[in-house]
Amino acid sequence: MTLLLKRQKNDAADAEAICEAASRPTMRFVAVKSETQQAQGMLFRTRDLLVRQRTQTVNALRGHFAEFGIIAPQGLVNTSRLAAALGDPVTELPAVVRELGGVLLGQIADLNRKVWELERRIRSGAYEDEEARRLMSIPGVGPITASAILAFAPPLESFKRGRDFSAWLGLVPRQHSTGGKSRLGKVSKMGQRDIRRLLIIGAMAVVRSAVRRGAPAGSWLARMLARKPRMLVAVALANRMARIAWALMTKKEVYQEPAPVA
Image 1 (spheres, rainbow, N blue to C red):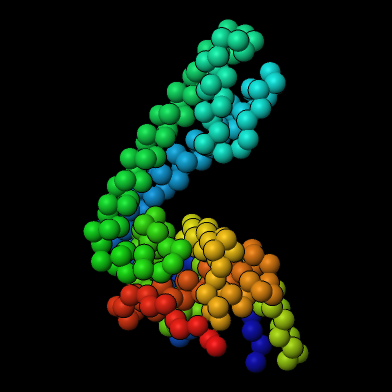
Image 2 (image 1 turned 180 degrees about the horizontal axis):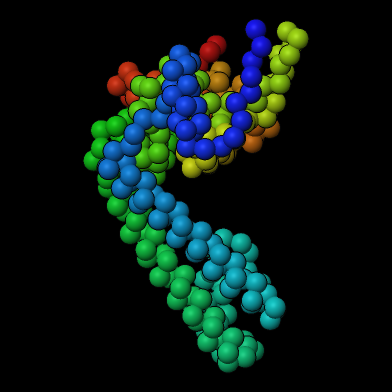
């Protein structure tokens, strides 16, 4: 049989291709989001935008002050050092620098207030939602991560297994397999980046706590930390958290800490 390639791009060809793809038995479809999910997603994205703007403003203030010999470490908490230097009359700064520095500090304070207000709304909504509370029972999953999963992910029941949800997030290894030889590389990073980023951040917090306080003897985390780098363990833990989230949401259960292996 000879296959003929269909060429040209037009509305009729697009409609035919859509119908052809929809008839395939292995085709996967995206569930339509509700208005509540869309609103929750806008709330999360607005907070994320304000956080990025706050980071940009802090970095701009640090960079400008560094030109005048006033150095502060990275991080929002160290902005107080720049504010103290700006308010110190002994500091030799031009009048325009003091004026514009005050403008940037005021912008940071305004963004802090707006971010805090949005976080308060996200947290209060998460603690009132049964599904969000179920997700927050997982170590490393807080109100913001739980709200992001509910806002951006399709119904987890639409995934056949936990690995499918993890693959949708881009937390599974990229495959380069051929000739019967299986080769797995780094995580694919395909899929929903917001949830993936939050899961990795939460997993990194769990890893840091385990390194500082010590993971339970015989636990999966203790065995991984004994032979793998911390960042690799964090990504693997994020993958594990995604699968646990799928299991809890589909079975309507809460997280139970597994018994350590002897």
